[in-house]
Image (spheres, rainbow, N blue to C red):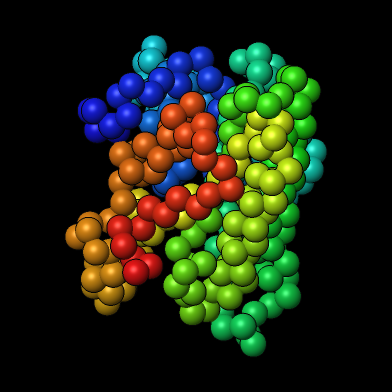
Length: 267
């Protein structure tokens, strides 16, 4: 994260769980949080990627923060509960969470979409988010969450809710549902000291986006023209700063909101 961004906002000692934190934007947010002093638990389905990411983060963060990894499939209730318990057993408590893990679908037109892929997209992107929130909220309540506390959940949405992408119907729908879940949780639990917000991302400079653009130069041209600020997002600088803001006391008056980080893509 660039020097000076939220320099007065500290995450020191806060324990944050990040699903899908082993690569891409999730990794960038995890790196920013750990550098700001947080104790971060990365969760992912791929144990190989997760362990590799955790080791890389430990090396880059040094003694500024702490990083641990746990394997989990967010479509399973028991895995979501185990993620939370791992964080509590490892670091003593849980203060915040980023529900970032996602399944993009199989990129088929609606009439060609297999039912199995449709179900997996919704199971991961809607049910998985709900199961994560359920476990996280119950832990916050068990820790004595009360009015005025600053427990915080971030649910990751997508610019596809503003500009639906073709051949991604189930994904587009699932991310719209995520924002609705976010608002519902904010209404129900903000009075008890648990805030919930969504982040909407445009195209970020990640390995996956670079691979896409290498194989589809025309898409690179289109995406570049859509991002009015003249660049793609930086996972650590842009997404990381937003995550720190929404998980910290700096955003104590913000709940049920959707913070859009898309460089003007949806305009």
